Image (cartoon, rainbow, N blue to C red; front, side, top):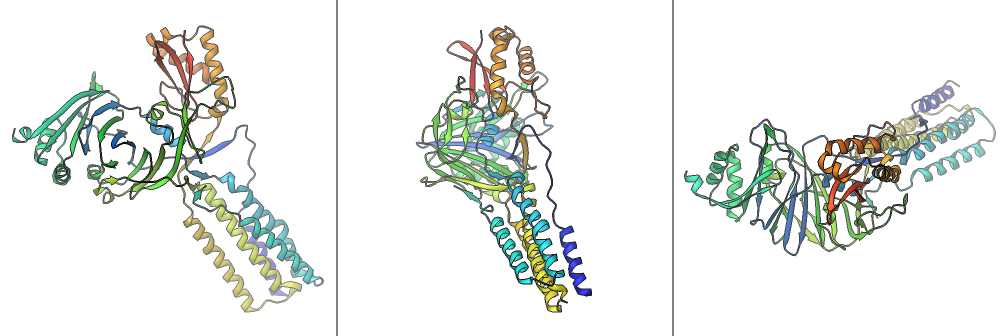
Length: 526
């Protein structure tokens, strides 16, 4: 009798320690989990490769107290073109080329079903099997059937990972020098690293150091040149940094990394490759691969509003709306998003980009931290349900369980814990943030309010050009006053999701608004 009560106590303890199903408060607007950059130094770049020409766009971001700010970019050939690039392209690409993120809400239903089944079905029937002396076979059959249905529901496919870039001075040859946005860019070539190092020091840069000179010697042997970009001063301060796009001939796409290794720190690299074929580059891993076509599909929320042409993936839900990125794409091009966390040792070699024929689209699947916890809860619930069924079988009709039976129960509990730990360790997790769909749902209202402000005379082309700060303040106030307090940042003049930009097309001024994928909507200014 005592052991029967011990069995009942075991059932109670098992249920107490089951993960409890939380009841969510109602929300007016749904949220989604989007992957974000990890909390470590990050470098972002775009490679456009076509017909033996590579365009390399590198985001230049740094924190330094140095009075001379700039960077050195090795290139396999003298660039044929240097141009300003928009830094907001990278945010738009990251949003448009998202991996499949399994959020907590996506697995909450299965977790809750598992927990409730254990509490309201398996547990009561197990208790009946233990303490009721008659109809034991019928009861156990019901319990086993419930367990079978539970397992069938839990084992639905959710864990996949696939869906669907002086003497020294004399030895340096100055190939060209030009202003590129806020940078003075000089292209130099040398026959020894000491010459490059001396030229950099004379120009106000820090010395390369022994390891840096070794790397430069390796580039010199291969016939490379060096683009030295120096941020110009704006009054007493420094001008704002921005990416630079360098176009040069290259037998194959390549991303220079060796000088980056001099920092001696781990780096998260996001590389977007636009080409006619699928890109790959060790040690980076693909996140999204798809072929893209141009479209002008109208918004489902406002059929009279037509965006500028943008690109959509043929097989995935990827969207590339940023106009500056779209200008570098073509119908049928393949976009590959590669990412990886690189150690200094892995940056000792440049990343050579391999190209292969397009086969099928790929979109890697990740899990949010909350989703991983819920899946572990589900595994624990299944394991505990099995334990409950076994306890009901060995303790039925208040039968005293044998020592072997209790060992089996202990073994089942141990296997459950090991299985949950293995699932926790195996699931690929990415940092995420919950993002409300305010801009997505109300972009039509944004367009309407902007048009009304223009019709009422509050916004004009003259104000946009002569008083840009006042224009931005009025526009931001008109378009954001109706938004709920969700932590949304104020609008700014930038070609990125949720912001605005003033541009002239054929002599006419247009107010451009950008939706969640940076698709551009133009409204003519009087």
